[in-house]
Every structure is written in C-alpha cells, then in structure tokens.
Image (cartoon, rainbow, N blue to C red):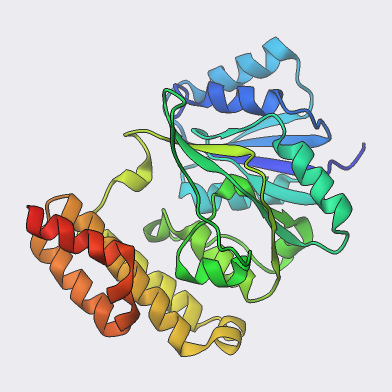
Length: 301
C-alpha cells in the first residue's frame, strides 16, 4: 500500500450538522495522495451515521472513521497521529475548510524545500455566509518562530509537520488546556524546528456562535494560562532557547488576552485584575492593540 504524502486528522464532537461542508472541502482537493482520519471523540449525535453515509455514497477508500471515548481535541488528535501513515501530518477542525488547492500547494512546497520539517499555510476567517471577516496578519520578515511567541497566529489546518516529529512530541491531553493545546505544541515545536511559510491563502476558519473558543470562564482561563506557563518552564529546550523573559511575555499575553474577553463577556472586575497581572509580567503588553481595545471598551461600558 502506497504511503500517503499527507495524513489529515479531524477530531470531531457532536458536529454532524457542520462536518459535511468540511468533508466536501477535502473531497474537492486537487491533490489526491492523502489519507483522512476522522476521530469521533465520543459524539452522542449522529456523527457516525453522517460520516459513514458520506464515505459510502462517494465510495472513498482512503478515508477512515474511528470512534473513541471523549478526551477532548488534544487526545483525539494524538489518537489520530497513532493511526496515521502519512509522511506529513496536518489537522482540520470539523467546522473549517480547505480550499481545493490546499494540499497541492503544500505538496509543491515540500518538493521545493527538501529539508522542511514544519511549515504553515496562510488562511483567512469567513462567516457562515462565506463573507470575508479578515485575513491573518503575518510578519513581514516571515519569521514564524518569533511570531508564535507573541500569540497563536496559526490554525491547526494550516500546520504541516513531518510525521517523525511526533515520536518525541504530542498534544497535551489535559482537558483544562482545551483551546490552547495547539498553541502550546507550536511553541514547543518552535524551539526545535524552523517553521517555514507558504504564503498563499489556502484555507478558511469559519466563525460561528458554536465555536468552543467563543466561551470564556474566569477560572478556566486562569487554569489554562498556568498550565501553558508550567509546561514551558518544564521544557528544558524551550527555556534554553528562549529563556524566562519570553515565558513571562507569553504569560502576560495569556492574561491580557483573557482580560479582554472577560471584559467583552461582562466580567469587568475580573477583567481588570487579569489586565493588571498581565502588565506586571510584561509592561510591553501596555502597547498592544489588545490593551488599547480593552481601555476603549472599558470606558465605553
């Protein structure tokens, strides 16, 4: 059996009503040497039947459905990695889409850059009516290793990693990290590999009210922040490459990020506390657009 160039892993949970558009985007790929692993993370809806009918109707042989007990996205992605056979592994959430040239561009990229281990493909945000919300702002110098230290500019479906990287690394499976487990992995990866950049937009993150990142809870946000910081402090290679100062900046970023979303959610007092704690970790946060937005919303409300 031919080894696929790409393994695409989709973790999904109760997204039967959304996943068909995602599956369509994979079936429409111009490049066909891939495998798809759909990891059903304990869904209680009709995800299994929806996916099975889709695969049967289109008679797709390189698509595989796996059911596992619920363990959140990090655990589902790791499960898919264990089952994968591709030379490169990439991910797609069950409510986002590849454009039809996504894998073709990725294939061309690795043919041109023989030594590439990790690369990211540009993407954009659209709403459910396919209207453009925004394009992601990437650094002009294309240094993604530095850019990721300032916040998670990546989408999971834009990241491609050589399969052998996962012999040593994986997504953290702690449920409390849900929503940031991908950024933590990219941070850890950035200390070990150069992250290359394919600049042509080839995928779309779809914004809708059901996205898990749209929910904010003070205790969960603080727990998630502390887990990221502690994981980085315990990573000797990350500390050796970037040092304590960068970890402090990441800590500050998480706190001010949480502050803005708490404010927008109506939790004004907690938002102010998070912001002040973030500024204590790094005064640089004072000059971020996020902090200016915080001040604007604070006085408008």
